[in-house]
Length: 277
Image 1 (cartoon, rainbow, N blue to C red):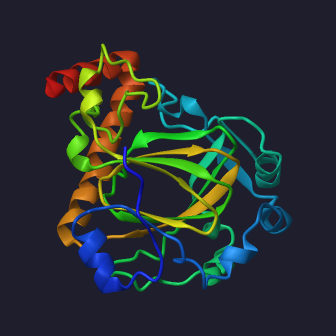
Image 2: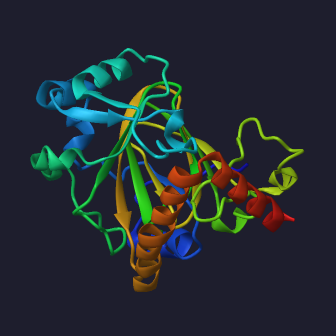
């Protein structure tokens, strides 16, 4: 596993030549320096102004086959959840793809459109909150956008694999996920995982991780924290492929999970193992 480049004062031309075109991740240490969000967005700020919002929280049960596949565990007050983060409470509860801006559109004034590349989708920024010890399982983003993931509070361990490692990661068909436990892999069941090459690093507050399109990523909250992702897609063809993934693959996988449960998971597992050879 390689460490991820850390850069500052990265100009658009150099970013394009060194990271965007080669599809290589980078941590940009000054990406959000001029954003008001960098200093304003704290657990106390969100709790004071938006603690009353009812939010869905997710656990490891998120990817468990069955009728509740990809469903929230429950809802709770945002302020109560933020107290778990402040206390560094060890729990697997997370908020992900959280569109707080639907409740608080004024927060969009706290950050600006980056000029590092084109294609930013500023209408849909999304936030991610996690308690200490929680993890985002290894996956890649279904819409195939590039992601600029800015950490505002807390730290997280990041593991990345390029798209060309998908077969060795035993990707389940019709999904963007893998059954392999990166930290405790079953090498008898998934022997080709020994061959994977990737990156590993720790993202600090104020840093922004560039995740190129279709890159596999795992996020482990080493302390309670939160981040925001801005998505960018400069390719019409890739955008069409992303829409297809969402409209067909995700919908089909959810339907089969709810209909067949564990049996559908076993079918996907057999296909993944056969493809890996």
